[in-house]
Image (cartoon, rainbow, N blue to C red):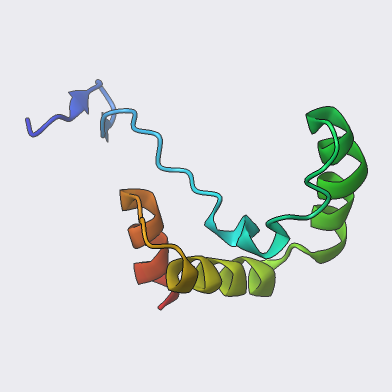
Amino acid sequence: MNGLLIFPIAQLPGLVNMHSHAAMTLLRGFADDVSLSDWLQNYIWPAEGKWVGEEFVEDGTKVFCLIDNHQTRSDLIVLDCCG
C-alpha cells in the first residue's frame, strides 16, 4: 500500500502539510514592528493583493532557496518545480 489510503473511487496519499511560505521571503521584515492583526490587515494582505502573482512567487521562492540555509521537503519540491 505504501502509505496510501484506498477509497472506492480513488487512491489518496496520506494527508501531509506540504504548503510553503517560501515566496513570502520578499516581504520579510515588512512592517514587523506592529501587532499580528495590524500587520496582516494593514500591511501584508494589501501588499499581497498589489504585488503577488506568478513572477513574485517564482522570484521569492528562488531568493528563499538562495539565502536560507534550512530547507524543508516542501521547499525543495517548490525549488525543483521552479528551477
